[in-house]
Length: 583
Image 1 (cartoon, rainbow, N blue to C red):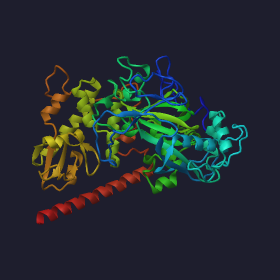
Image 2 (image 1 turned 90 degrees about the horizontal axis):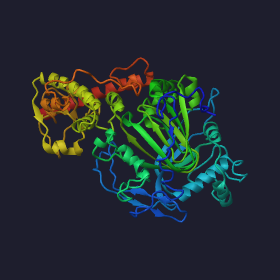
Image 3 (image 1 turned 120 degrees about the vertical axis):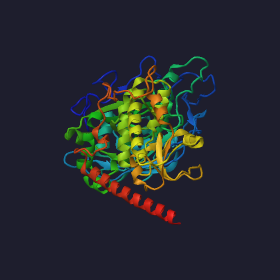
Image 4 (image 1 turned 30 degrees about the vertical axis):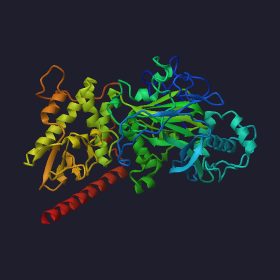
C-alpha cells in the first residue's frame, strides 16, 4: 500500500471537516443529496428537466451555452440560461487518452511516472466506457471477478479496446461488470506497483465535460430541494463565495464540469488555478482515491518533485509540474518528510481541497463526478501570492484578481476584501507616482475599452499580469481594431521611453474612494495591511517576488531563462519603435 490510512503520511491540516486533524472527505448527512445522478428517485421532475430511464435512474446534464476564458481560449462569455438533457448509456462524450509508459519500481518505492494525454482522442458512449472498465477490471483483478478470464495482464489495459484488452470476451465482461469491486487497498496497490509494469497502459477519461448533474435551481417550484442547496453551481456562486463577482463563465471554475472515469483513470498532482478552493462530488459509481498535501508543505513537495522524483525530466523541462501530467507515489513523498493525506471518496461524498494544496488521485472503476471552485475570504492572501507567482513565471492567471476585488468591495462583501484591495491600490498609486515623475502623458480609458472582455484586464506583454487598473502602451491610439501590446506599471520601463502613455481605468480619487471604510473620508488608505487569517496557513513563500533559497535549482534556472527572454522582447520592441519613427 502506498500510504496506510491514518499512518505517518497523513497531515493534520489537509482538508478539515470542522477543524484541523479531521479527514477531508465530507460525508453528507441529513440535508445532503443521496442520489442525484442515478440510483433511484431524487427530487422528482416537476419542471420536466429530469427524465426517468429504463433502469429508474434520474440523470441530466447542462448541455451547451457555456463559455471559456484563459490564454488558450482567448474568449469570454456572459452567463446564460442553459437547457438540461438526459444522460444514458448511449450518451457520447469526448474522451482523452491517458498513456502511462512501462515502468519499474526503484529504491523500494513504486516509481514516479509521467502520464501523457491525447485530448479529444475519441467519442465514447457511457455504456462503452462501462464495458471497457469491466474489461480492465477483469484483467487486473480476475480473482475478485470470480475467475473470469479476461485478456489483459498486469500492465496492459487499453481504454480503446486493444493492446491488453480482449474485446471479444462478452461473457467475461458481463461477469466483471456484475462482480463486486475490489477493495480500495487492492486498487491502490495495483495502481502504484503493477499498472504499466510490463508495457504501456492506456486509459480513457471523459473529463472536463461542461455541465452539472444537479437539478436546476427552481426546478421544483417555489420549494428549494435539498439537492439544489448542495448543487456545486450554488456553492460556487453562493453569497459567501467571491467567485460570484466574476461576471462571466469560466467552465470548471465558476461553472461545474463533469468527469466520467474508468478503472485507474487519474488526475495528476497539481494545485488549483489562482490557488482556489475546489470541491468535488461523486455522483455515482466506483470510489476514488485522493491524496493531498497541506499548503504548509507545498514548498517541500516542489523540492521532492524536482530533486527526487523527476530530476532529469525537470532539468529538461523546468515547467513540468505546471503541466498536470506527473504522478509521484505518496510513499516517496513520505520518505522525504512530506506528509500525505489519503481518503477514499464514496458516492454521495464531497472532497474539498484547500488553497495551494497539491492533490492527485484515481478512480476504482466507472464513475461520474462533478467539480467546481469556490472562494472564501481566507483565500485572499493566497490570491495575492498566486498573482505574484504568475507574474514571476509569466503565466496569465485564470482570475483577474483586481477586477474581482473591486466588484467585491463595491458590494461591501467584507472588510477582508477591502483590506486586500487597499494593499493593491497602495501599490498601484506608488507605481503611478513613479511613472508620472518621468513626464509621460496619461489618459482615461475609453468606455468601449473599459467594457472590452467584460472588464477583464489585458495581459502584460512581459509578465502576463491582467492589467485591470491601468497599463502603459506606446502611443495614444487604442481602438477595438488596433490594440497595441501593453505593459503593466511594473514593466513600463521595458517599453521604449519615447511615446509611452499611461492609461487608467480609475482615477486616483476613485481608487481611494473604493478603499475608504464606510463612514470615513476617502483621503488616504487604511493603515493596516492584510494578513493571513488564522484558519489557513500563510501562503508558500515561493509566491513572493524574490527567488527563495529553497526553490529547486531547475525552477531558478527556468526563471533565469525567462529574464533572458524578456530582455529579447525589449530589444525587439525598441527596434520596431525605432523603425516606425524613422518611417
